[in-house]
Length: 380
Ligand SMILES: Cc1cc2nc3c(=O)[nH]c(=O)nc-3n(C[C@H](O)[C@H](O)[C@H](O)COP(=O)(O)OP(=O)(O)OC[C@H]3O[C@@H](n4cnc5c(N)ncnc54)[C@H](O)[C@@H]3O)c2cc1C
Image 1 (cartoon, rainbow, N blue to C red):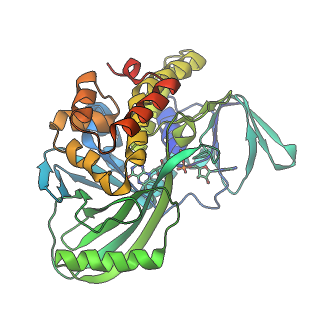
Image 2 (cartoon, rainbow, N blue to C red):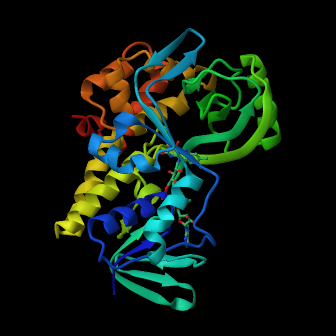
Image 3 (tube, protein in one colour):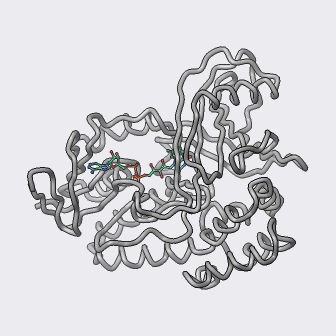
């Protein structure tokens, strides 16, 4: 009998396993994944420094590959540099470093058929039991989405040095296939991640077209590519309501522990991992801890589901106006937005002025949203 079985050895469950081992090394843990290797070269996980309390950041700092003290945004009407810290983690480094901590608990190349609160069923009806089974098998296919956040990123080496400040939203590019922007992270003087991001109703991506757009963007910036080192792509559903909760313990995307509008999940996954490990270490009632955590997370996210509706119901060529206005707000509002801890006065700031769509369409979004959940309940 295990203390914990983690179904899926992705980002969220790996963080939990790591924190549980740290808090109580004698815990009996098993982490199962269908992947053949505990590796991934396909993600850059970024987050805002303010997303995590200082002591949590110190604890995860050894896994952070790059940290910047400021970042910029660029819209047709203005450019702004914000004194807000930003961090990135390369998935290949993350899994390599984590392997030393969790390797004794790993069972790879194993497909899970189903999970319940205490049981994992593998193929041939083979069952494993634990006090707590956490389902962290990633996004649920059945979630109805309003649209998608999709992106293709290229890690490149450039011929000459470039600015050393991340550009997390460069909207000064031709708008097509929804709302579109470039995102650049300078790893070193001459190496950089350049990512084309869309908020689109179409989940399809053409890698050939993306390469062409990359070269056009680089040329527009006056840069020159020496080499493309790596490529990453992803399509994340943008949803209008909380993922349905089955009768189990879940983590990461499966549990709805992600930012509904930006798709960032690292900070909330890590906060959950730390708090669960502390609860386990203090012999708290885990069932109660989990129920409270889910409740709190739901309340904090409600506003973002309304924002998602507005973002996708606005005409594609007007969507940028929501973000253009947003990035003019005070840094502490921007910080709380990313942290998912928005306040009533932030909501008023975000929604002040004319909506980027007809009043009747905006009212419809509010109405649909209010039927699902009154968002003001979630704001403090
Ligand atoms: C290209 C890209 C860039 C991103 N950028 C960011 C970012 O900058 N910041 C950020 O915070 N987030 C980012 N995200 C989102 C983030 O990667 C995901 O939210 C995160 O990986 C979700 O973590 P998870 O643990 O829930 O799921 P995953 O990390 O997807 O892990 C799920 C695991 O479950 C395993 N699994 C699934 N089904 C089974 C089964 N039946 N049996 C056994 N194993 C199974 C899978 O193999 C996988 O290893 C990005 C996503 C993509 C695609």
